[in-house]
Length: 481
Ligand code: BGP
View 1 (spheres, protein in one colour):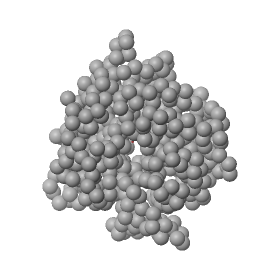
View 2 (cartoon, helix red, strand yellow):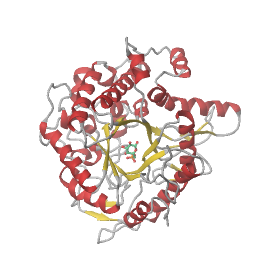
View 3 (cartoon, protein in one colour):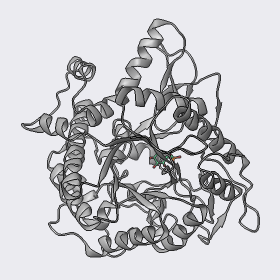
View 4 (cartoon, helix red, strand yellow):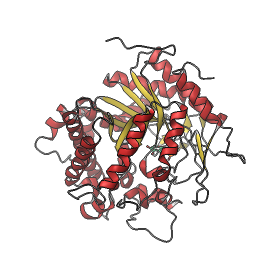
């Protein structure tokens, strides 16, 4: 079937919008029956990183810390106003995530919390009224604390049953309202931030790698099961996996560096290989075997993975990465991944390497590898904004970043033939940063009056980029000026 294209080369039904995660914007952490989630316990300040990466165990609130997720930008009470602003920009999609503990406060109840279901139902109905297609992440760094304390998080196979319960409820209740689903946000992040990605905490003497790959296997099985159930409940449903992407380049053409970049890329593609091809890749099984890690594969798992692969592949892209066989050069930071600093690239204020062409490269690699439609579900620049007295921000740096990335995205489609379903920027409205807990690391087209310590009126106002993105959407990517 021939897809209709517009002037830019993008599909005529291309989905444009923005992406958020419940824990970084909703707030209302204890309202209407919501239970406690891992992400509620991620404080602002230097211990945050140790907690989300499981170097430090923190399972109860402490007076010592400020927890930005408790109130976040209070989208729990501002969602109508926020959706209206998204609609004004012309969004045709909005990616959001479900707070698991709004639906199942402890995670192991047999009946869901009606107030939580109602909240998202009203939101989806409003999306429908506004002509916005919801793209729903079932879990975005979100996990009931009760399931950590009682069961040990995703390292325990039992969690698959609770996840199954959750997805059945969601697919049934929101049938006809939601069609696009993502099973796990940035599934590969669980290897780097186990508490945030899989509700895993470690004890003295634990074989960490064994635990991480057990959690990975359980999430992959749960994802295949969700895909199966989604299709059974509504054949219209489209289910995608979600990868924290960004190619590793070899630091030099020295074969050792090239081999290292191949290996580094495989650590990430391992997840998409299973999601999309339905089998564990040979290189992955070998690597785990060499390290003495056994996947806890049970009867029926491999058949399930094989039979229920994803419909599309979604990913976040902020930066490319660099591999070096023997690390001699300076390291860079960036979205939880180790990388050597790329001397050809500039960096954001948070040290993330800015590489628009890397998006085209990453898209091509993913499309060559899987031949399934792609969906870019996160891309953006976290920056320090200077706001004036009217709440206006002249954020040309953000426009420049997005323009450059959208350009190469269009090249990947129009020049290289990649099949791309849509593009959602990260944080269309300022929200809490996942890695740092800061509000001052802003991504939005919409400014929110709130600071790192939780002061501010929460008032929303439009930045310069608001009008720019509106034009981009209106022209389906043809007008990027
Ligand atoms: C991705 C996460 C998001 C988001 C984004 C930006 O890894 O999926 O939740 O926060 O990165 O990262 P940060 O908020 O740390 O700047």
